[in-house]
Image (cartoon, rainbow over all chains, first blue to last red; front, side, top):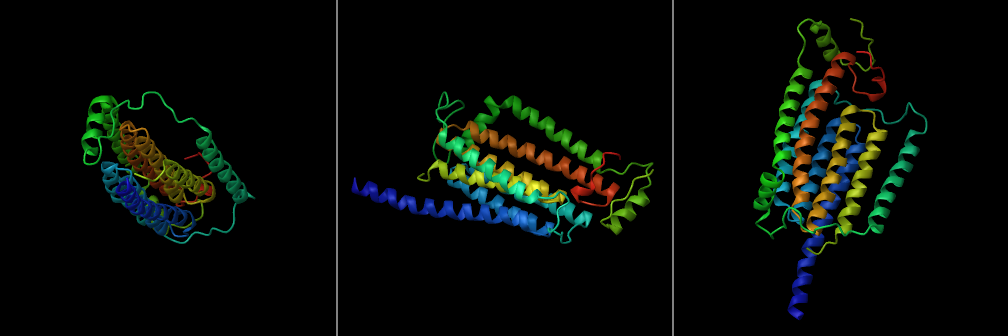
Length: 206
Length: 101
């Protein structure tokens, strides 16, 4: 009994430490995303948040998702963001001062507080029963996460998995079509706009 | 696993709120996109928490699919941003107020 309690307490301290480190990474990164004037800094703060989420995934024994989070989000999506930021040349500081819509910021603060409060209230009021406690299959402890997840995806979620394959193909084709320059448009004009990259909106007359 | 799941859920609610605030307040289209990613991550965090609490791998499978869809969404969205930038030479959402191409 006593040794059990000692084991429990010694297990608690690293868990708490990991949780608070991950939570601090998430919150600092998220606040950095929305207060950075430079979009490049926002993207780098986003990396911090994504790593924090990966840390909390590992803390919750979702090992495979933590690895995928780092590879896909931090490795691919943020690099894509940075590439587009550099490509468009919008890596300049943005004025955060004035709003075109008057009183937008106080209304945004009020709305966000309302939403977070209602989410927390709903969560604390709800009865978390659910139906069957294990629809797909339980987590079979550590070191089994990849096998469990793979079995779930390739048996119960096989149709959804095939649909995501189609979705990814559509997304790739759509991105190529969107980013391609059409042959008949005046691409020199587009290049000039891209190089000058001034902030004024230009009427499109072609 | 001694961290109560309510802590994770409150953390993900706060992260979701920060994402909403960014989408509402920021004017740069790319930063608004990043804030949408913040909200997706908040949802992923709560799904993994429920997967642990209910002892069901299905929540983690959902997060897997959300990751795939988020990647596809970012690809198409950034393609749209590049196309808009070619036409208007701005990444400011206030100045993209007309649907006329």
